[in-house]
Structure formats: structure tokens, C-alpha cells
Image (cartoon, rainbow, N blue to C red; front, side, top):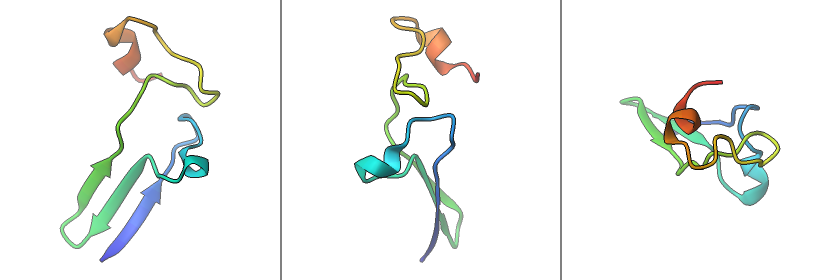
Length: 58
């Protein structure tokens, strides 16, 4: 199975913790997204206690 690991620079550096933010596999184009928290690239909480702010694209 062919797979592509995606780790956007806008998210914290997860590779150093042993996982990728997103993995896309072929054939069939299955996408796996890791559990997310409201951290920015510096591991600071974004929109504490505000789900709307946490889920908006920045």
C-alpha cells in the first residue's frame, strides 16, 4: 500500500512525537487524520474554551 504523510507547518511538529498529522493511502484514496488539539505551530492553545475559534481555518 502506497502512503503519503502530510505534516502542515501551521500545526505543531508531530513527527518528533512519532506520528504524522495526516496520512493518505492508495489505492482507494483513504485519508487518516490524527486526533487534533487546538495547538498552533508553537504548541500554544488557540481559542481556549472556544470551539468555534478552534475549528476555524487561520
